[in-house]
Structure formats: structure tokens, C-alpha cells
Image 1: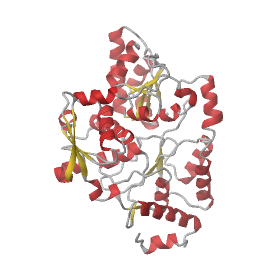
Image 2 (image 1 turned 120 degrees about the vertical axis):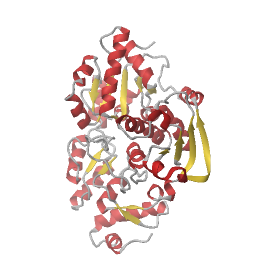
Image 3 (image 1 turned 30 degrees about the vertical axis):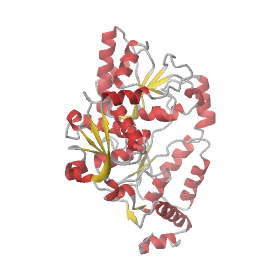
Image 4 (image 1 turned 90 degrees about the vertical axis):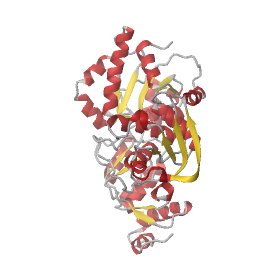
Length: 424
């Protein structure tokens, strides 16, 4: 790797042993992917994926303490993924005992380390840091050092920023030295599509299901999607970006997609069109039958397949303000149609703390509360990591949560029917 004079000086230890180790790690990381150089990070803020104080993650806390002791801090303020716990989310005595005594025992300590390193503020815990309410929204073309897969794919695809699918800790190291290795999705060539996906469904496909199908097919490649714009439009408004948030998270978790292009919609596709497609690109056609096949083949991880669900999570990644409003209205309507006053299954809608703050100040918050639904800033995935929670029959509209836990996936319309009418 060719380094600048400044970069080489850091590697040589001229700014201290700790910073030299950070630079060495990034150089080795870049070498592993064939990077020829390091390029500056140009975003105002960073985002870290590691937000949870798991007892077993002592090497992370040791590393962070070494940085702090050496006076090495992030070159950017940063947001971080959601907190793992919230007392408002249903959990019995034994589950809470495991959470507090065997799992997230270092949460308070770790958050203290994050604050010293450069945490944006006490409410900057969300996987959707790019929400307007949160304030960590990169500009098109900016170079990032992120690791959260759902945020990386959103930043690359919807915002037109540039970021590889980094691993945890690499994100903070890039921010500390101010550079990241130049390869993959940072390059023009790496952002070209090697798949053409044609959406030929009869109606707007569920975002999480469509993303799952594409992710499992193309894996880490870049898809160029044709035909989706006829359902979701050609403008990146609130409803469309919320759709793409969920769609992208599913491509990233059910596969390893870090960037997608949607014809006539996403920034690079609008500007460059089909010139983004490489010669000899593979094709994948998605129709109603293909989506039905994909959903039917999801394994049911419950001990009893026909068990009655006793918890529902909606919001992985976190919901937008518009989605909270939409769920409120739809749940009210569903309850009215079924002649019921409260949801039939404990239901948790999750969103960023600052999104929830805005929602709680609206007319919709008391209406949602009246239905029995709980709102939370929690990370549902971290909740489901509890061995006792894994055994629960949990349902979700998130394909990411389905992929990483024992939660069972249903489309949003199916979830709505289950929680307002009761499981059949």
C-alpha cells in the first residue's frame, strides 16, 4: 500500500505507539482487500455498530481503555447502534435476571467509554442515524467509516455516500486516524452493478421480502433494479426512503449487499442510468410466485411451529416518524374492524430516541398508546440474544431480525391482522 508522508509518519509511531497500532490495523485491513492507498474520511460524523455492553466483550473494553489512556479519541463525533435494554419492553423475572446479571453487565461502563471517545450525545443510539431527527446524514459522495450493515447500504444507495461494509471496531479506527482503505464500494468500478434485477410483481412488493429475495440471490454483489420505481415512484420522499431503509436492511442481512441501484430513483442510477451495469451482468426476475416461494422457504425456528405468538417486534431497523404514524393509523383501523380495543399480542414498535421524542409530541402518540402498543428505542436483536427470549414464539415484520434470531417473519399486512384480530 502506498502511504502519504503523514500516514507513514503515524505508522512509524511519530504520533505515539497507540496511534501507530491503529494505523497498522487499517493498513493490514486494506492489504487484505488489495487496497493501494488510504483516503480521507470526509463525513462530519461517524457511526459505530458496537453499542452493547455484553459481559463477554472484554477485549473491546480493554481496547477502548487503551485508546482513552493514550489520549487517542475519535476524529469525529459519532452515533452508535441501539441500546440492548429497555424496562418498558416485556420481559419476565428470569429474563430480566439473565439480562442484568449474565449478559449486558458492562452497559453503563461501556457507554461511559463511548462518551469519552466522542459520542454525539446521550440519545445517539440507533441503527438509523441518518434520520433527520438524529442528525447524522451524510452527503452524496462523502467517504464514511461505518460498519452497521443496514446503515452502510442506506448511505451508499439512497444517499450516494461511499462506504465499505466494514467490521465493528474498524469503524472507530478509521475515525481515529481519519482515513480508510480505498477499495470496493469506495471506487467507481466497485460501485457498478453485476446483477440486473427485474421486478415484475402485480403490486408493490413488501420491502423486507423483496430485499430478502435479492440479498439471497446476489449475495455481496451490486444489483441494478428495474421496475420497482413504478410502485414507489421516482422521488426520495419520506415514504420512499422508509421503504428503501427496510428493503436495504433485508438485502444486507439476508445476503451481504452494501449498495444497490434502483432505476430512475437512487442518485447514481438517476445520473448514470444503465451505464452502471457491467457487460455480462447476471439477471434475476422477481414476480409474485418468486416472492411467495422465498417466504414459504423461511424455516420456523420455534420449538412448536403452531405456537401462539406472545410478542411482536416491528422496527428492525428502527422505524421512521412516518412509519410510526402509519402503524398507528393501521392498528386503529384493524382494531375497529375486529371490534377490539387493544392489540391481542404484546407489540413493540422501535425507533430512534429522537424520532420517538418527536412522535411523543404528536397527536398520534396517545392514540397508539390507547391500542396497547409499546414504543421503545431498544435493539430487538439484542433482546432476542437472551437464551430465554430465544425460546419465545416472537413474530416480526423484519427480515433482519428473522435472519439473526428465532423470530418468525410475517409481511406487514399479516402482522397487522395477527396483532389486531389474534392468531388463528
